[in-house]
Image (cartoon, rainbow, N blue to C red; front, top):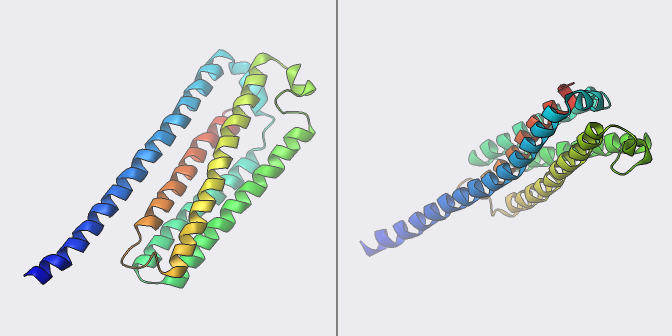
Length: 209
């Protein structure tokens, strides 16, 4: 009987740890949603106050670039979700490949964003530029929010890439395996948050002309 109890205890302990880890990640994601939620509210208020100027500023953004980045991130959400299924089925190599694909897609998003920002700087549309300070207040506010919100999102993409790279290492060393993959699930949840935030940013800045 004592041997059964000894076997049950570790499993019960592991289960509690998994539940605690998932709960901790959900609480963290909730704080992130509050952060971006506040920014979305600020955006909505300023857009209401400067509708015509926000409309004018939005025409400076390239919808095609935003659409490509949206497709890239949505695809990355699919690959990271598939990596969980792969590890559940004990397919270690496939899981590593899928996490690797997620990292490649994330890098493609950042490269695309870099060229987009570089173009905006080239034409003088950046905070404090002589070109921008001479424009109406609403346009200045629009680009201020654009750089803050998309920049903060890009930072989250970079953090997510670091997290997923660590998860990939855990899969390679066997720390994450068929019987224990809660870390990968947590990393995937964070990545899904990154994608969800972009799904809101995309229409606000690229579609609402």
